[in-house]
Amino acid sequence: MKKIGVLTSGGDSPGMNAAIRAVVRKAIYHNLEVYGVYGGYLGLINGNIKKLELGSVGDIIHRGGTMLYSARCEEFKTKEGQLKGVEQLKKHGIDGLVVIGGDGSYRGAKALTELGFPCVGVPGTIDNDIPGTEHTIGFDTALNTVIDAIDKIRDTASSHERTFVVEVMGRNAGDIALWAGLAGGAEAIVIPEENYDINEIADRLKRSHERGKRHSIIIVAEGVCRGEELSKQITEATGFATWVTVLGHVQRGGSPSAFDRVLASRLGARAVELLIEGKGGRAVGIRKNQVVDYDFDEVFSNEHTLDLELCKLSKELSI
Ligand code: F6P
Image 1 (cartoon, protein in one colour):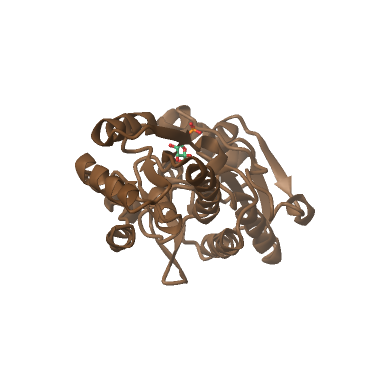
Image 2: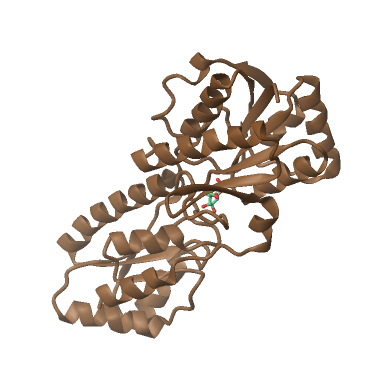
């Protein structure tokens, strides 16, 4: 292993830059050359590849987004696209690739590895939905962005005695909704992993209203339904007027939290070590605060599980 590449792919997440920095610095520390692939797999197909030096990754650890840019690339899902990618990597003399992204990005990395080109996956997504790792890079920052928004919504909700539905991202996973709901003291959390009963939510809201509570916040994960839809159901079941806030892409930006920067640094560095050790076809992750690595197949043969104990706790605390 003399030259490695690094790319970011799929939806960006805060901390991707810290991961890129760790990959570049760790590789140079081990006397490897590093190449940045700009624009995800699309950039790879198009040969948008440039050498990175120590200074290329200076002043980025605290920045959101990704300096390598990102894309969602349909062509790379085809064998033809993947072969074009391998050709470009070989043309630049690159021997291994670190792919920072979510499970879609891992599929591309697995395909490249099967074509004889070793890749290591680093989990970068706000959704926290990659099996095998307890945290993904960007989740903590996104969560704090959501909490900040909930706290602000609560201020105005209390002043006006209003009920708010807050729709958060997460694709098919409820992690952002669940953690944000628990940390933000929401009255109800609606996530794809659990069926919800609108009458039970309505009773809960009415009870807290009768107790004199001046605000109610319900968090809904986008994987369940739109905030508007839930809001209508709540109004029908309670008779309360309901306001909706969709947080959207604000959740994907911003300076990464200290947790995400440290996680990204640890995982990015480990990914380089794996390539040096000749262990392509693996993903890195964190379990019980230990950096682990495991086969890509483990990602695809397992379902992401959410901590249902937290659901139970949030219900107990929001009676
Ligand atoms: O996977 C990250 C994510 O932000 C999801 O939470 C969301 O569903 C999706 O990406 C949005 O993707 P796009 O920015 O391509 O619309």
